[in-house]
Image 1 (cartoon, rainbow, N blue to C red):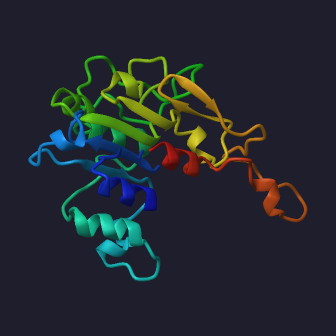
Image 2: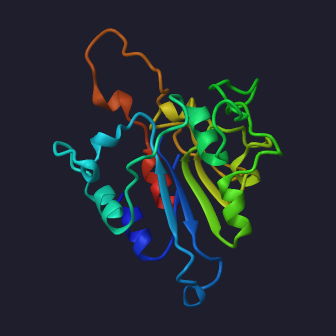
Image 3: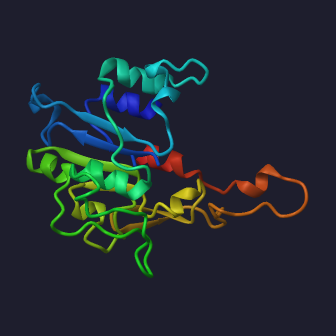
Length: 224
């Protein structure tokens, strides 16, 4: 989150998906040409994080200073609800503005024989596309889950200039995956990945058995 705080001060906008961040810059022009009436946007969407678990919403036991800074310098949402209790539909509702009775994605169904979930169609209109048409530079960093990389639901086909992270939410169950994606480029990350649902065998638990070479969240934040 320290990286995100610095990015906001540099007038960049951002986007993360289990976390996914949308980083959206107010203009594609140089800083001297940016319009004051076109704000930069940083929207952080996190799976399984209750609003009461953040300091900016009153929680006192867990320190979240950088998120608290973003809230203090930006805005807090006090009547803002997820569109679904599970991953892909919640993202679809946010991205398209359609409730689950009309949204294209209504479950976490995996695309057959592909890395990723059931894709958004070419008819989907996402908030990223709308912002792109308005002159924003757009990026998404973290977890996607709205279509394989070569499908109509891929981030670069749904309004994002740059995506970096997990294309499949199943792969995102591991902090040490074999690879991540930068748009259509597969980026190797760990030669000895740690599967997200790996079971502890009989015997003593050793921390080194659960740590890969490269920690995916660090790579994602650096890219953002």
